[in-house]
Length: 365
Image (cartoon, rainbow, N blue to C red; front, side, top):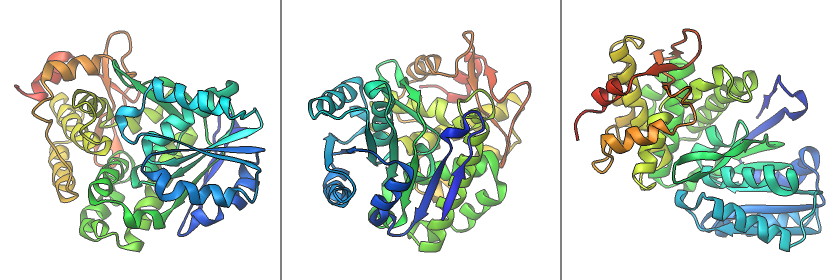
């Protein structure tokens, strides 16, 4: 199955998302078609690199003479400038030139770091996303957002750099730990909440089957989420308009991740963020009553947290939210749902919210 991302701003950067079982085995052929290069730097983390990296490099030896696997320690806390600098230096030391390409093999952290590396290495080289987690397959590998975290917040340093190809091998999900599966499903819930009430209903009805990794059910999750994300990105490549709706749950979610020192997984933080942001929308009168409660029920069924961690104080969360990329003119802004499947729009896709209202919704410490 192939889903096209037809970017309207720069048509030459449009690309395909290939979804299928056993797709990892056809990487060499697809690279020749979508991203030919004299050399390939495979970027992965210490966990995924051992599972799939060496085998992928052996496959790539059939299409290029220079193949090298570069790994860094797994974990969101390693998504840093230091990791980016180390990988850059190692590629330079290995004499990768401008005729090389980067392959991001891993979850969301790997995709973000490798994409930022590709965007900046020798002023930019092409790259391919090979996501290995559900979250990466249905969300972070699509759209060209790359970057690293800094003490002030998540993804505050980065670049828009579109991949030449995204390759999602559904077979890789069979070995995904339950906690990682649930974390990925948080993004699926978000996609339904922002754009497709019927899809949200499917997640409600079939949550048990999905958690059992039923093949057709999981394939439907990947396909529909990719379709939604691809359509939004194609319309608004650089988040100048409607793409802001993809941030539902993320403004508060990123703050929760940072204050927990990334002990809370990204998908878990987004789940919590969606609940609080939906409650915020209801308090402001822009979100239909009962929306937050419906989100709570589904997220709990998918084994996801719904309340902020004890260690995330209101003051800490407010401080992190103030540093969010979506703050404009000092105003804290949120993308909020009108109802399940429809986002609120009124002179833009985000709503300015007073700090006092955010504190009211977060509650007391």
